[in-house]
Each structure stands twice: as C-alpha cells, then as structure tokens.
Length: 264
Image (cartoon, rainbow, N blue to C red; front, side):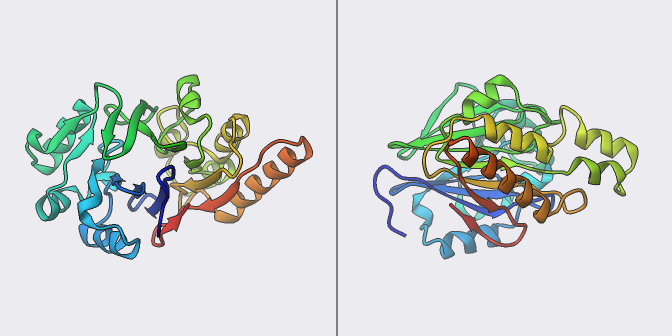
C-alpha cells in the first residue's frame, strides 16, 4: 500500500489475552508494538502487509506480561531487532526470557525517533512494573495505543487527544465479569484500577476526546470470557448516535481480533 509522507497506518495483528501485536508504519519506516505471538506469525503479517524487514526499526514493548512478549526471543534471534521499553520492564523481560540488557533500549528519556516516526510513551495503570501506552506522529498524522490499563488518568487522556488513529482497550463488560466464571480474586484484579478497561470507561474516554475528522478507532484486547463483540459494537454505535445528535465529530469503528489482521 502506498502512503504519502504525512500518513500512518495501524495494523492490529493480534488482540486479546492469548497474544497482542500491533504494527505501525509510515511511508518510510515501521515498528512493532508488543510481540505476544510467534515470530513466524509476525513475519507472515509483515509480508502480507508488504512491509519489508529493512523498514522495521524495532519492537516497542508496553509491559512484561507474556501475552505481550512471548515472541521476543525469536524476533531477536532471527531478525536482530532492538527492543524499546522502560528500564524496569527491560530487566523483568530479561530475567523472564534470559536476555541480556544489550538487547534493550530504554525509553525512560521520553520520546524517540524510529525512522521518520516520532514515538512517545506515557504511563498507564496495570499490574506490571512500569506499563506504558504509545503515541506516535508522522507528518500531520497522530496514532495512539492504550491497552492494559484499569483506569484513565488526566495525563493518559491528554495523550489520546487529537488522535487520527486510535487503538483503545475495551476489555470487559461489567455485568459479564460480575456474573462470569472467574474466581473472585481474578475478577477483582481485572476490574481494579491496575487491571483492564471496561467497555463503559472506554466509551466515556472516547466520547470526551477531541476527535479529528475521519478518526478511526480499533477497540482492542477484548476478553473472550467477559465481553462480546456485539456488546462493544452496540455501545459504540449508540455513542455515535449521541455525537451525531449533538453535531459532534464521530469516528469509524473497528474491532481487534485474536487471529485476523485489522487495519486502519
């Protein structure tokens, strides 16, 4: 796909509790956010998206949970890609996967350039050592990703403002979690301030943002046990109707998938 110099694309390769991986590309560069699926699957996705490996600047890791890092050792071994993450996260991943710190570039200094894409991490609220979300820019286009957070602070909210392309967690339906099969401690973890974002909070966050014309949103990291695509879709559609009735800018709806690539 041909991109102009001002554009970005976001490709959610996998989204869910069994593995997460997103690819962001510009006309000249690309990078991967999280590698919670196999190296083979990520490589096949890059091929399907016509993104050559020489364009890929590295992997940005949001936190150290296995559904975000499982493919990292093989990606390093096969492709030699650098890993960008917070220092404490790098140490945890290194310990888990027996990787030297030389594999990692720490993001503690703030924004970095990956090719012609400016990448800026921001802190989220999850039961990991130092979890982050990502905003990035190329030309006049802004893309943002925020998953694995139990709440949305003012700072997080500000980072999402004016995003042309947004990957936003809508992990669970509150009633499904409450009456679902999880044990009490796990329900409390998922629904806590360091857990995951429920549908209602995701919609509230999105409705309160400044939304550029033509904005596209992928609702991501949907729980297989505590959520359902029709519920998320209905809530988003109802929000769009409210926005339209107020004469406000809407957005296009997309849904992350555990197995299929979803592109915006």
